[in-house]
Image (cartoon, rainbow, N blue to C red; front, side):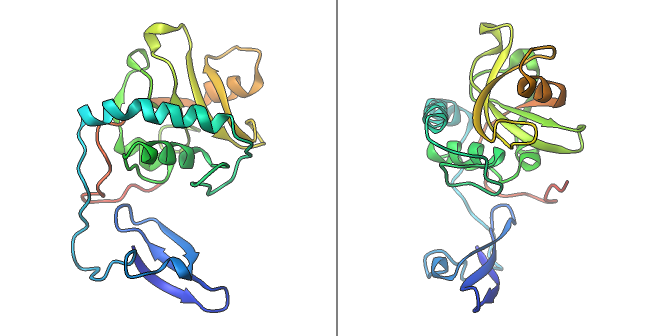
Length: 208
């Protein structure tokens, strides 16, 4: 990352990640010779991972998610480290555990993924939700192949207003008795498949 500004009063620094231009405040002690980008003008370079290697890592992604559901947790906006996450933080951390880097936010993750149909969905795919196609604000991880069940099952970290205030497992179909599952089924937008590790935006960075 590169340092944008420092706040001595709070002992923190505002930084921008090179891979996705995400800005955040972090403790000043995290700004070290090993973490700071010494020459911001140099192009960002990251390890490239292809579809075959991503597919081979999905078991680790799913194992991480299963483990996360068993830990005491609540929904945490901005949470990326656990045990409490927000929706895209859980997804990002699960894939990072398997050595695969993803963008930070749900709408960025959708832009990065390869679109697939609902009928083609399989374990490890990402399900995206929102008010419409231009306002993606929630993401979940598919836990079962579409061909194996009449209803997709997914794990996600959802808030207290419409969700479970933490990590939970739901089914994707409208008309179910469960209010949380029914809410997200009505907000479902699309399915995306991770086919590579994120290495940065080439061109325009997606925006809401």
